[in-house]
Length: 196
Image (cartoon, rainbow, N blue to C red; front, top):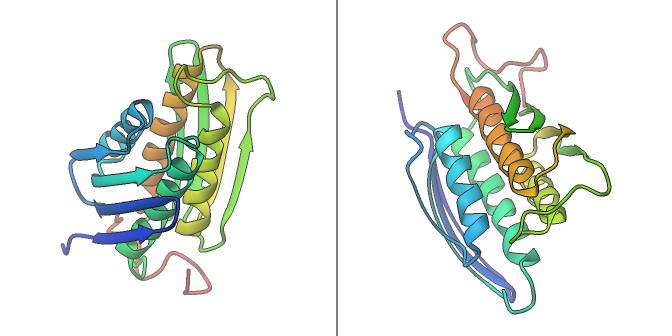
């Protein structure tokens, strides 16, 4: 089987990002964004999605973390879409219920080429100590938009901000892993339209 890989570079006045991904990897990663907690989340994303990920981001962290987190989501989405190619033989859909101690998250993905994020969490959801919770949603939105995927994330319950963010990143990884996987029974593109 030909490995599904891609590389991307993106430079703006706010960030510079270099990224390489292998969708058929073993979850190895080398990540440096300048935001240690975000590095931790992306390492989990790589490991649980079994995506090999090399990422270097240099952003305007003196302003805040927003541009680096959002632009990283943009580049991961773009790169995954390129690596998927024509999507022949993929499962297309993925779903994961992910527990993390007192937290339970549901993530559902459709690699439909129709970008949409449905992100449901209470307005008072706590942040992780070193990453605002709003940036978890921004990452998911940027990834869904640029992967051109339909992504639903729902925090069913939870109290600890670290556990909530971690469950979302792990759940997103597992759902994407399932959706990206090849299925020998799928012939061509998994759509009656014969296009995704």
